[in-house]
Structure formats: structure tokens, C-alpha cells
Image 1: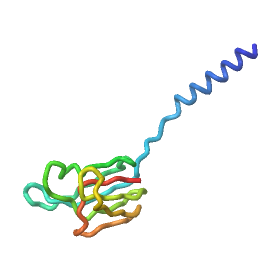
Image 2 (image 1 turned 180 degrees about the horizontal axis):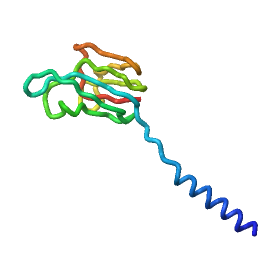
Image 3 (image 1 turned 180 degrees about the vertical axis):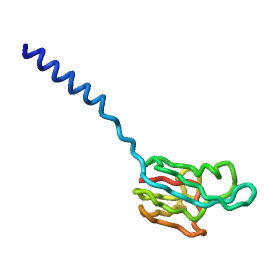
Image 4 (image 1 turned 90 degrees about the horizontal axis):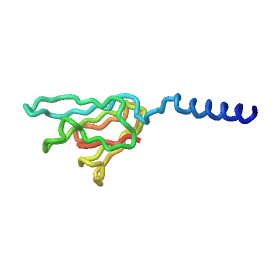
Length: 114
């Protein structure tokens, strides 16, 4: 009888572990930036709730030889912007959470949130 009770308790604990949803690690909020499109029109790009710890190449300019600029970090994580596509450049700048911003002179091609 005790074996059956112990087994039932163990099985219930394992089942409970599988029913608890896994939380995805993401920076909550919006990260915005400016860029010029192919018609040289000023556009605003936005990353909403971006994943943390992943290098994100700015999608709108990924296939062009142009840079985004004027980043605004309205997420709850620090954003580190890079001048290259793969977040490995020595040219980077950190933007604080909840309001960190850069000027038109701060160019970027990729970003990572921590």
C-alpha cells in the first residue's frame, strides 16, 4: 500500500512539472530605430518583446549596405547595439532599459538584449 501511495505521489509530481508552462526569456517592451527605405523615405522599425541573449540583425536593412540609427530602448532589458550584422564588432553602445536612447549619429545593424 505504501509503495502505491509513493508511486502515485511521484507520478503526480512529474505530471505537475509537465503542466507548468515554460517561460520564455524575452525583453518586454519595444525597441525602435529609424532607417531609410529603398525610396530614401524615413521609416521607423520596431522590435516588440525581443528575445534576450540572441543577436538580432535589423531586419529591414539586412540585405542593404545601409545602417539604422536613432535607437530607443523602451524594453526592460539593456540593449547593446552593434555596427556590424553579427553582434561581434568592437563598435558597440549600451542603451539602458526603459528609455535609453541614441542620436542620429549612433548607427547600428544588430542588437542584443541582456
